[in-house]
Image (cartoon, rainbow, N blue to C red; front, side, top):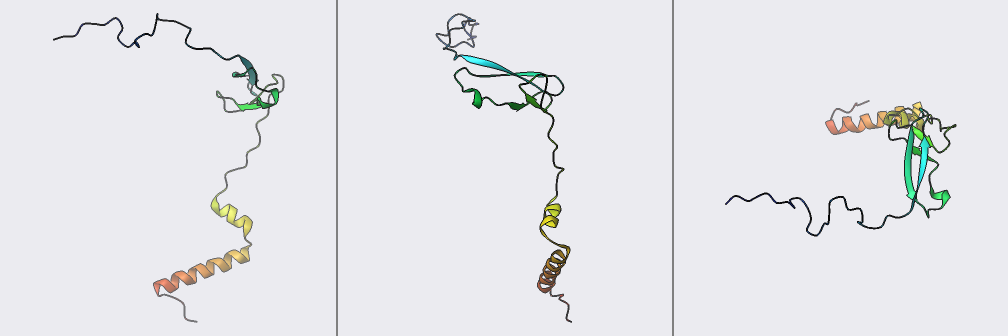
Length: 121
């Protein structure tokens, strides 16, 4: 038996007429505009009863990744980022050259002892 086309295919039972907008109550909200250094505007919506000090002053612009602020004339500048540091760079910050040489020699001695190739002075 071949099933016929149904007029309500893909609809929920009791969904009501298409385009019905009374599906719940929308909370009051306030639109806040943010601008980045390239002049792009981003609008974020916040609850109308949210205290002003809880609305962020700076966000990341979704279009450019730059920081965006609420002052159109003075958008925030991109903070200078630290260059990526390797593990070795962090170790060098914590150790002097003498400490590094002593640790390296100790590690080599342990390795040689495990392999049975230790120096016999």
